Image (cartoon, rainbow, N blue to C red; front, top):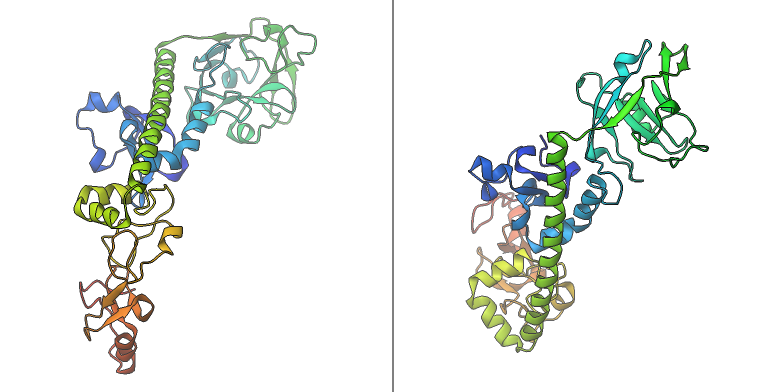
Length: 364
């Protein structure tokens, strides 16, 4: 089961493969949850599994590369035999036969950057055995986790050079002729490679493989849907930007302040409330400001009003009730403030202000 964390960023999993979802995205029907695709996303200060169809445009932009990389690494879509099928190794003899014979399942999360699948034997989780490809030797090896991680040419099984074979040098293991395999017979430090006449690697097609193929198709469809959604959303946003920028600054401020949902959308999608660009935005000194990009934020009206919410950038001190510009204020995380004169006076009188005078939030 996969948990929501930075390690799983952008990875796509079905509901049956994940641990927990955010309360906002909770699916209470178990069957519906198991058939729903989720993507691991960082939102509001924590990692969570979000239904793929409900991911915001802002999060999609941040996760796009990770999602594409996940799809490519998990499912290599080419004309070769599907890599989601498990393989069965039989006929190995010698002292290490128990390490070799068995059913090995593909591990999409372990796919190497060069596209070679990694296989894990399904019946021994305490002492894992992996079948992996070593590019420096152009050979398959069967070894432990350390050998697999380092792609080290060490283990209990290897294939011979395929220079004189009809199979390519990086052929999948079931394609290689059984006479080209050798098994290590003996202890780790002493032994020799032997040939096993009955050795065989077969490609299987069981229920688990069919389920993995089904998931592959679902991920492909989801990726196409998300790309179509992005393209359509970009078109709508381009049209909206043209219309928005046709309005005067006063009309922009009026419509943003009159429609509460619009403020939420601008904040959530990181849209500048002045030029409608999709850049990193910051609010002004007022907590309800939807935000503006850096270029627009530098532009103030003659009365020093925010280009987005239209409010004055002067605030009243809740202690002395005088109005000051922002450079003469100490603004707290809660977006309330106190003038520097009153703030420094509290230190002078040894009565330091530890809480916001307005909302009583502790000052860090």
